Image (cartoon, rainbow, N blue to C red; front, top):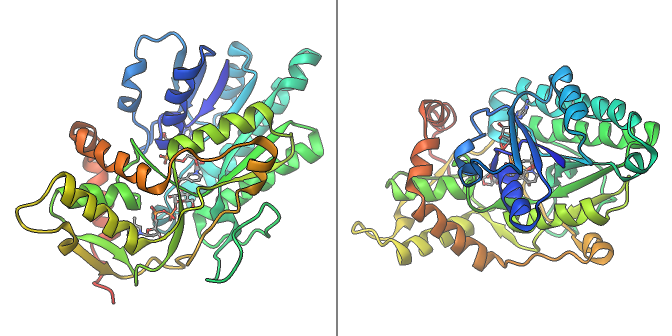
Length: 356
Ligand code: NAD
Ligand code: DAU
């Protein structure tokens, strides 16, 4: 068995579903079910004995220790986090709590638990920490992509909290010998992503004939990876990564935000044409995100060289699948657009003036 934290969120749930589609090794899924966690995403696993779900907080040390002692997992794959940069600007405390304190709690519980295992299981145990490329800071247009050796320069409360957690993970290896692995991945997209992030937000707003809010000039660049490719990278690192090492994961897909939004509009024009004309008419430039990082790009050569991992999807195949998935799943979209979601939209976009 493996323990997955945050397995009801976007990437965690994709990971759980992909894992159980390939293997009968059970998953213990610990998730608090914040606004970002949704058991509907895991509906196909209802009644499946290979999936044990526990609603709980990674900051609850007694709970984590009890679960480790009871289920004796061979590994922890740690996704649980507060993950949205804009929310971290509005309310950073939750990010420090879950991302820093929560990771610390898991590390301490894992260290204590591992000491109780017999030698073979101790050696095989792994703690895989799922992190982000945002810890490296922002690139200029001519800078090389982020390699694992890049200095940490986090700029938002979110990326600072993830950087802090990465440092704790590193220290627990160096000081206590905990067999940790860290992955630093670029922007993910795909099915079941909460519509607060760029790609699903643009799809659901377009389908509702709402403005498509592009921050600033729309020329900020992100490096996009289809979520199932992130999941396959994590499986490779878990199986064959070297403890103490970090692996950058990315799709070699740098795109400016405005190009992403135009691509989504073009796909919707093809797949669900609107009688009112192209969805591109809805594009609206709004006031920029404070401290908005200009460019991220990942150098994914280490994971390819050492573990043979490469993404299976191109951006063109992945974005088409993603748009089609949102068209095919209106009920999931309606379910996650709860009162709390509407409150967030009002808080983040309500007083954002029109931009350049
Ligand atoms: P998400 O916000 O969709 O999901 C986070 C999950 O964690 C939710 O199910 C939530 O209920 C759970 N959670 C939050 N606080 C918790 C707590 N205290 N205890 C237990 N569970 C808690 O996030 P995501 O986009 O799936 O990201 C997963 C991980 O991958 C995060 O660590 C994130 O930093 C990292 N990451 C994300 C991306 C991306 O593009 N989304 C890219 C690189 C890395
Ligand atoms: O790089 C990896 C990171 O990618 C992950 O660690 C984070 O968890 C994930 O949220 C993501 O962070 P970003 O800030 O890059 O993603 P987001 O989807 O919020 O924004 C992508 C880009 O689009 C960014 O430049 C801001 C812009 N944007 C976003 C929103 C929500 C807009 O222009 N308008 C919007 O409404």
